Length: 66
Image (tube, rainbow, N blue to C red; front, side, top):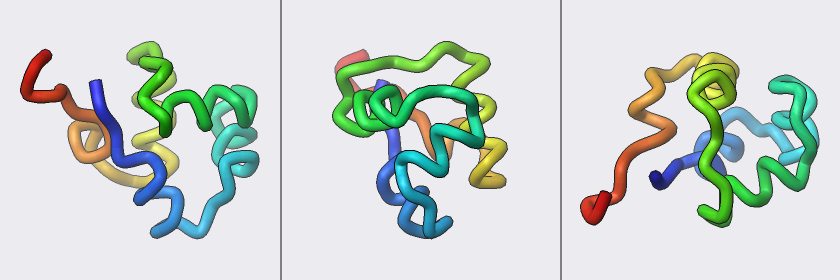
């Protein structure tokens, strides 16, 4: 699964730390997701999409190989 976290954070003017606090995870978790090294749970993905006010599929999407 891929994501647009970095882009969405920039649009929302949020740091990794600020986003992490809003969804109750560590900054390292946000960093790992942005680097595509960590796939979030469905609940975490939904929380993040809600922070940005966007549909889940706008923030997270399947790679063509998935």
